[in-house]
Image (cartoon, one colour):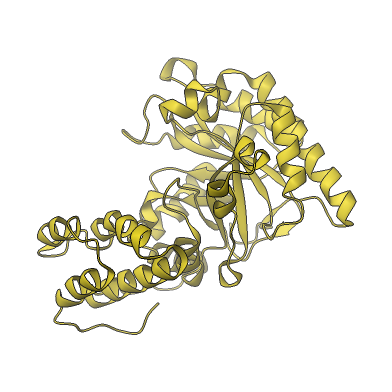
Length: 340
């Protein structure tokens, strides 16, 4: 397994473990933390092709890549081939290493627009979108005198349990020129409930000649290795398993190398990491946004820790950065380690 060539198009990876794109979560600070702990590639939050085309300021913010988080991929979304082509061409000169097209988001407002997982219902459109994206990336690269960035897609196994067609969708993407396909082993109607069906990831791997990235229900380093063993997938994309636990990448790499499993992070390490994450959010987004966005992170970092429910309750009423830091530091009497 370890002897596999770890490449997506012309991009070489250091290991097979990737941080999944998560809307509202995988911002630059989150990506930087996961990179430090071993993620071979991280992904931006979803970027609207139309938003970029029309100069939306919030969209532009999503494209910020910090030097010490690289390599980073952009994930874009849209349903119009001409818009996607414009987008990939426009992103040719950015610091991202590849561009992924979201074809799996289950959120109603995205699906109603015919985007995200709605695209699974139209494999012909999947082909057209990928082909357009590849053409845009090529045109942009030619103008810059660089190599085109690989185009990939991330999808689900089907829109409903009665319409599982991921192999057809994946083949359409490959035919359109995709360099890899990521498969989340759930249908759109499942959202994030139930169990991911890894057998469908295996089916895609058997059907394609390009790399397949497995995703879904990877919550430990051992899960990542088991997914590779059971499905034959080339790479593993870790999403919710990394929330409050960026050490999952360190654990997965150890298992991949055949090394002993690292000790689980202590409560002090978890709280220190959380404070470090908050400091980076403050620097990147300012107090107002950082305090509010960190509220959800607190629940993930403190999961299973004694007294965490009360801390979460108190955090939700805090709007001040210093008050937030004081509360978190007080959990262990102010004892913290160096930042991760």
